[in-house]
Amino acid sequence: MLERDGESVATRIHGNLLVNNGDYIAAATLEGHGISVLPTFIIGNRIKSGDLVPVLADWKVPPIAIHAVYAQTRSLPAKTRVLIDFLVERFGPEPYWEESCASPGKLPTSTTTDPG
Image 1 (cartoon, rainbow, N blue to C red):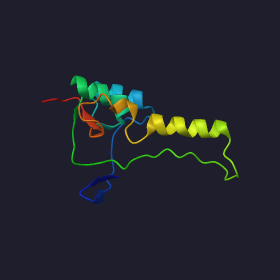
Image 2 (cartoon, rainbow, N blue to C red; image 1 turned 90 degrees about the vertical axis):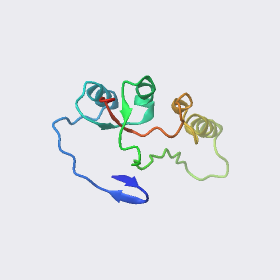
Image 3 (cartoon, helix red, strand yellow; image 1 turned 45 degrees about the vertical axis):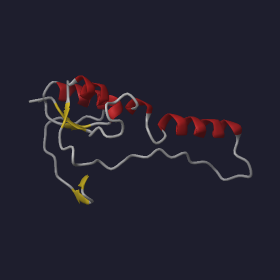
Image 4 (cartoon, rainbow, N blue to C red; image 1 turned 60 degrees about the horizontal axis):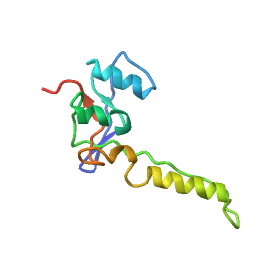
């Protein structure tokens, strides 16, 4: 499901490659097997280097969230609090893998190997 200007559009995708590994999808995209939707921590450096170029930049993929779920008790165990603080720091509003991007948080996740 993609979204642009508040409008969601579902499109059936046809192809002959079906995998569930982002690195493999990135490798197939780099070899010219089509476009892919991948997170910037996998392909951000490839976009910065020019190996991949964004396409469909006006379209956005819904965000994926990380949730820390714990039982509500009188006091949160120190180990749990440390883990939650670590997750917030590591994956907070601006993920560490986007800090070095040309325009952090703005990289589209659709890519292609045809820069021309």
